[in-house]
Image (cartoon, rainbow over all chains, first blue to last red):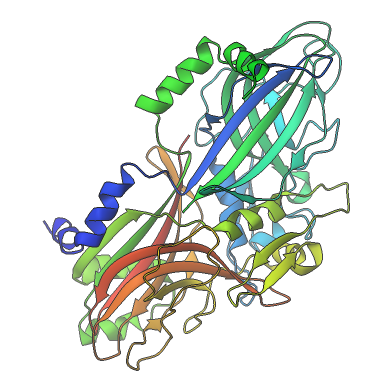
Length: 225
Length: 252
């Protein structure tokens, strides 16, 4: 009863109206994923359209929350993140000790050929979990059997689009392996201090890329007031 | 949408993908990231106020309040409030490559209404060196969790609180405490972290809170940017303390 009464007292008309509107309103933050596949002539042949992503893992909030440490105070609080090898890495000085390069906090704009950071793909079929720290079975960069050529990632400036603010990151993957490859998972990794890699996002998908085709994986970050 | 894109959509939405879409509608319909605003109102006795004054960590303070002080009212609502600057800042933080020295600028409007071109020199360097600066010390009302009396509905391009309530004990003023955040933890099916700030009314009369926001501060230039802005309608009586928390939650 002691828990219920305070909630009832706060339930004025404004708050009640808010609760009802919440049944219809979109969440203030959303994440979507699109998987589009093109043939060698760059013609779009397959496209999932934007699906809801179900994939922020603990590494994302670990990185974001650590950023809020205040420069006007001693950054003495301990922060941590589990690397992609499953080892918890602690950072005794908080955010400044977490990053590889002070000017590039959490790099995900991966270069071509890089299969350690940015958007990555894999063949693992386990459902994503909150505490995932790595892709289950990452597809390596290359043109050998079971490999995909990793392209350069692209990140857009956020823009106000209708009622939303949208920001997009994308990365192409080309299949020159000689056979079809079915992508079953997508993730985003960044690099922290001492080259420790951390997983930020992980999603399940099921899309086949035939030999000679390339796919563009796109994450859409959206906020709506 | 042209016919080719429509055909591509039909080909791309295989059975597995259609099943995912169906699940998103009927079962798995929460966003993978959510924000909530929690306001807890306490009315401490003079003896309890003396103890509270000694507690600087807002999370310790909350534990003390929940265990010892009568909670008068509590509200937990979905936040509808990430504004443009949030994604702009996130773009800057993530949009980098360890092998390249190139950045693009993102224009953000600070809380004073001035457009700031934020890139490596102006913003990212500060972020990288010191953090974002969301942990405001007591009395500071230029950043951290803030409250106001403005009644205009929040909008995507909001850059400041409409009518910020000043720090103090004069008429219409509130006393702002320490603003801190906690690292993320698994809580049931979710991952959660929270940002908390206590605010006390010693003004002598009731004050109606109509807006809540969270602003951050850059290090070298001291620019302040609003990242969250919510409409509320709660009265804080004289002598009461409200603990305002933003809960960030992710769910796979």
